[in-house]
Length: 174
Image (cartoon, rainbow, N blue to C red; front, side, top):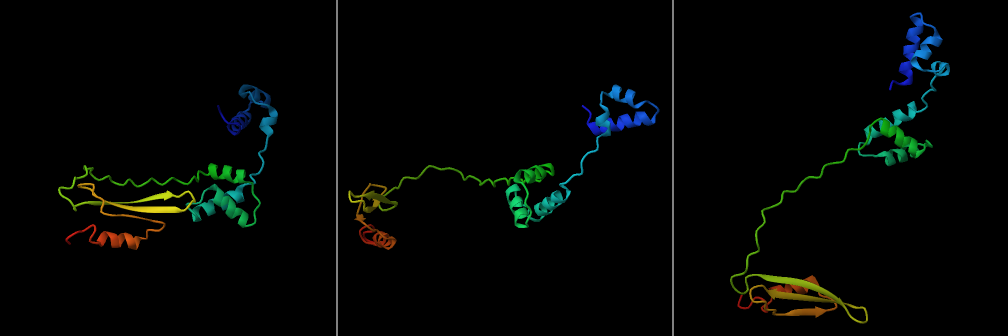
């Protein structure tokens, strides 16, 4: 399918070559009004240039931010019009590729060979019937599942957990 401006140019060429206007139009299959049609002036030239300038100045701005900037400048422009002109100029913001984090080699967890080698700590939260929060600090020896102490209270601060970890209860003989 040939565009209308190209067909107009072809008809004019035939007319200059000596063919009549009617014959040239009939051969192409075009009406006389289509031949005499004058396209309207592009009223978006200034807006297109401003959108392009904003897009080059703010590279990571999409249609929404550019439309907002135009409004801040005092131009009352329809968002859909800005979107159409933005798309026509192929100014879409490119999506950044996510950096792939290399995955380390997976290895099974080692079992402790003796007591007091590996300890696990966990903080468990619960609620009383009145709605108060209770926090339980549970410390377990992974070798023999020995629980030397369980700290229960409304508040178990980190300093208490550190004192408990460094105490003689967990590290006997150290």
